[in-house]
Image (tube, rainbow, N blue to C red; front, side, top):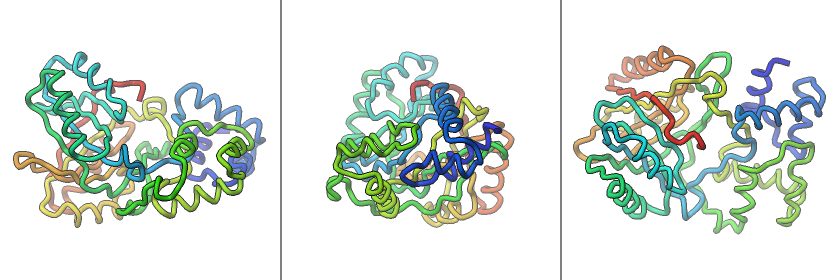
Length: 314
């Protein structure tokens, strides 16, 4: 069977059931052993980053706030990147083609005060005096899926929930949720081992479904590594607008190519409060999205392309 079909199914149509891989194999019309073997190969080779419950980190107090940071560090990129990569809650670290700010990274923390302290310390250690600190104000969309036939990111996920309950308030084990996201085994009965947390397989499935409704879990699916599937370009689009919320709500509805859509707190000298990401197999496709947004809404959009992933482990 065409590998692309399997990867599309894993991203978009993975059944949330007691035996998701058995049911997926049936949907595909292949044997369960064949599918499990193939998925394990794809995970081992790095094509599949993980399969499981994709968590919304706003539901976790110690990592419930995020920030995008840009450092102006000239040619001293590799040394600076090594220091940044020490951050335990680092999510991305890229060299980008902005003429002034060339190292861009995102990380998480408990609150904005903690994030700011960490950035100030990072800047001191890196010897960087010129930087941007852009904490998240609101996440409108977060759904990284790749249409392997269109050659561009694509998702019809609706508006992200603004108010998400905290995991500790719900009385659910954070450790178990991280296991469901990061370490779900590709086997016939992947939920069986969660009996150690006091749940039957059916109860785990019901819990994931309930947490999706609450916004604690975004979805149950496979996550692919873009560099392994021919998606060599990602563009971070900075939007200059006077009404970020109004425009963001339109973008969620009109542009399924967007994976991340975030409104950020910005300093007075940085007039770009809204950010969206598009991934593709060519810059031409990303440029088309940028131009469509500019023409449709009459706004300025600056696209900053990734040149190099400064932390290949992520």
